[in-house]
Length: 310
Length: 310
Image (cartoon, rainbow over all chains, first blue to last red; front, top):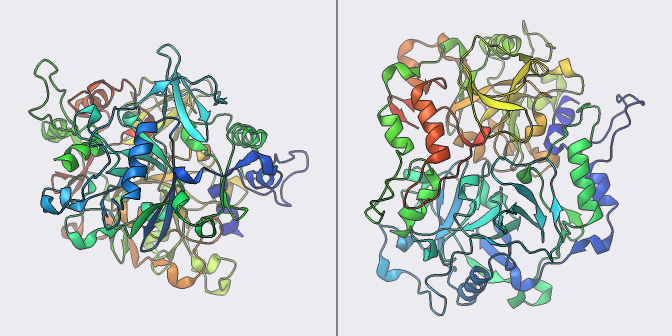
């Protein structure tokens, strides 16, 4: 009993009331309840030209690109993928409570640069795309509890977003599972050939200093549970420690039968609003007092595969 | 080159200026600089009666208990440890972006409860200790940028702390690497025999709903990089998936020669204040614009072993 109840801390939103819960304190709907009651129209099927399938030995990672925010990076990454650029590259770095990064290992100082994959038709440099003008045409789902780093936070197009109305700018937030673009010192030195996923506390200092390419929708555990690198900044010290990338493909380039049946809850939907409300005001036997607050990286757009929530 | 510079995002604070950095924009001291210049008196050697050595097959995890905040839990955990309670238990649950939990696997519903370890002289229930009255005698190092969840945040005694002056209460914050006490529905049902470490975005909804026992000082990677459980809420579905706990000992019960030479920077020290300042106002070639803000889970008290920062 203890395990299942203690385990309820895992879900927070999804805790189911038990018979020990006093009747006068009627529990609020759980996340599971809310998702079960969601309507088919509240779920979107991501555009397959925005979905990357990264095949690792342990399984598939599915990443949704964010071309509404970083269109030039999305286009360059598609070009790289279609050239087979990432096939045979590797995860070169896993730094605890920070990022898992993949790249051409021959780009490392110990590597043989002559063997580096060619960027081919992809661009070597891109305009930064660290922020974009606030797009008032897109549905905006604000969070009401503020943020340490930005004047406003909320969701747009399925992604966590921060806004600075005074500057008229918005940008993707580097929450857990977001995929960013590594770069050199020059702001335009990132091109999407070296990417990272956030695997710890959101490193908000990266916000609007690096381009964010998208979000891991599925298979995050294949990136987050890797052995940490023992070199400086979590780089692997030996080639054999790296996880090989077998292939990266665009879902659009696969026959429909080989694509994942993956859907994401619209962040402008009533069900997503209900999830936000449950996180802020929900209470149950385990959490008798509502938290009352919600941070931008403390909720994300739910994903389902074959109709089953991940 | 790209790797090492892109890798600079890893450190944020610790990025070293390069020759490409314009002279007029003199970089601020890095975390590495600040730690190198710290004084011996700014480091404390944790009381060995507060240090747990949890030996896993891959290595040792060192946890510092927080008896100033949760004294009854610290005492009960010491009693359990000295009885050998944890020896032969296991990590039973790893939920991505949430917690790694260890416990008696025979407490699981599929286990043989008759084989559960005896609590012996330890108490089966404890007063919650979810908060304590604000202790104004302790040095308090506030963070000035606010918090989504609490009226005030800062550091006290080496730990991240939230405060509500209106209620006169303070509590440990569930940041990455903090160790919490699993419990049943009743607030007094936790006793320290089932513990978890936070391995993802700080689950702030747990704050002042669960007791926090302490913090992982060393070996976090042995908890964070474990395979995620595939059962509900990250529980392992098969016994063979669990990581065995070889032993948990108090440092105080080992001969001094067998203890780690581990030190923690005083969070009331000038060097820790300088680290906070560097995180907020630091700039360099990679981050030309200071972030200006710092969240409570975005910095922690540095640890060194044999004089080397971890």
